[in-house]
Image (tube, rainbow, N blue to C red; front, side, top):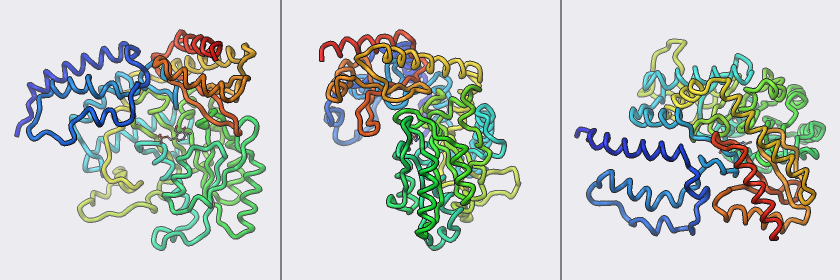
Length: 462
Ligand SMILES: Cc1ncc(COP(=O)(O)O)c(C=O)c1O
């Protein structure tokens, strides 16, 4: 059956116009939806249509039923989680990707998929100042990238694990501020949460190297095998930066795999003024940075780098006859370096994005976000009713009302009820804080100023 390309032309013109108007002004929508759980499900038929429907009817329902349930991450006043951007080049590349539906499971299945990942990730690696021997591949999320790091670390410390399951009492280390994806990776790798040591962080939410060292020494004395250390550059709650070099020194002493979780703040390494945080990266083993967080690439795109691809290969490679390819040394089949076989053409959107903006424009955008966050932090500091809950080194700001936790909670809830702003919250050393993250391309100083004015207005009513 042929594709109905005439229908495609009509429907894609309508969709393209909708996208253009959307990207022009996403703020015509509430940033967060005002719906009850189950409302979308209840608004749609319980079973699929017997006969196919017109694209125009489907589009009508997209606008009528689906859109009201969407949280608009592309809204300039989206300040929740890590704010991000689905950009014009990213949208175009996603359209092209879907139309070809190519699957780069191994090199021959679609050479462009593995080779463009290689090119785009090499560009990003250079911009971030990473060592030349980092081998890159793209996964969907940082959670999956980190899971691969932990599984490689397991292989590194316990090479029999692939055949026998874990044969040693392995332990993993991160700070108490590390992302929950580390816990999940430890579960997935079969190491077990009881063997994940969450090292206390200092007053600025950075891992304390002396406590890290003490924990490792204690584990060694008790017969454990420390296998992996996760150093976070840009933690989720406060964007604090663990001290990489002291951690590396401790790891080196015991041959421990060091994984750098730079899912969010790794993007800032394209700014010379932030490259200090990656000093020593040439001695680490792996790193994750998410272009879908702060590099204007649409979900999903997580760049995973390792200096030891042969360990990943040893962990994962299995080649049945139907997946056998050539033996050309330049041929890279990414199925050999991870769990997944099928592979989306994610390199295309990253390549589009890096080319479209170029390094200078990306730097300008990131510096703009950081400046807006600093301005917000200064407003917090200048108003005696508020206090900063943590240092704000990048583009996220945590603050609270001095009048107490209940009032800060009420403030966050009231801001989010407006539908104009969407902020988050966190708990820092047992104390609640509001959290504002700036990362959307369209966010302007007026948006952050409006957020602050609304914050003050609500506070006066509490
Ligand atoms: C530091 C850090 N690591 C990992 C993740 C997980 O990212 P993903 O949603 O891509 O799995 C996050 C998410 O915010 C994060 O902040």
